[in-house]
Image 1 (cartoon, rainbow, N blue to C red):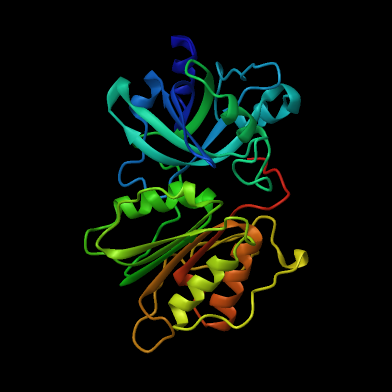
Image 2 (image 1 turned 120 degrees about the vertical axis):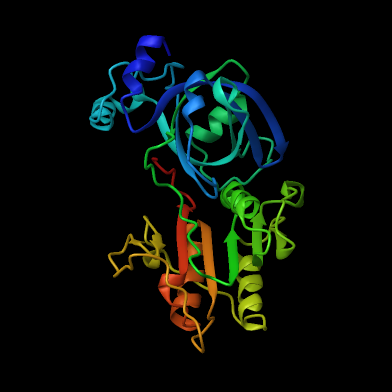
Length: 329
């Protein structure tokens, strides 16, 4: 972006700026890691731990052109949506993996889950704009990033354990960067467990976690999505493996599944903040964070809240994506 363009964008309470691809690495069959840079990233937030901070990336349209935000103001979203879809480019949501450096040298690092024609990755996962772009990404290319600006409220962090004494993180490959960020930013005395499902064993990454938090990787390696994840999580909570697999019909899936202590996509009553039960309540002291494919997350939500009796105020369930559906943003 030109200096003039950045002057306009600086009036917004978040960053909305072009960034340049500095590095690209295929770190495993299912992940492409991209490092992005730009002068505006000197103002990148949040003002505290990153945890599971979500951002938006806008990819070029079919002609390789990015939308201009030269005159961006508070109406920028409406203006952008009025541009024909084939012209405006595609917006997708990602989690920050890392923020490296500072000032004008700040780099925003994002891991993008991919599938390619050679069979690497998961054929069912969002074969859309982000996937296509990541497979051909190269240094020097440009994107538009929407991200938190220091000193301004942005949202996009769901990790909120309150006074929990033990933690549970559960996710598939799309949740790996978020789980990594949460584990990295936890206090050293945190206790709990993380269960992470990935397409193949080669996708397992090294995660830094407090000594009291165990990390279990569950490669599908051709197995059914969510099957081992469900089994492992329920065994962890109940002490015994479930006798029957969790079955979820398409009709049960909320396409916008996002149930946290303070937000409900289904309109359920919500609390002002996380409220972890104490004393003799079922699973007292536990805070659970669960993200990934909507059907898998829906199945776990039903078991944990309906069958095991977890208070919905002590758990966050997030449908990051839905099998067979290309997410819009």
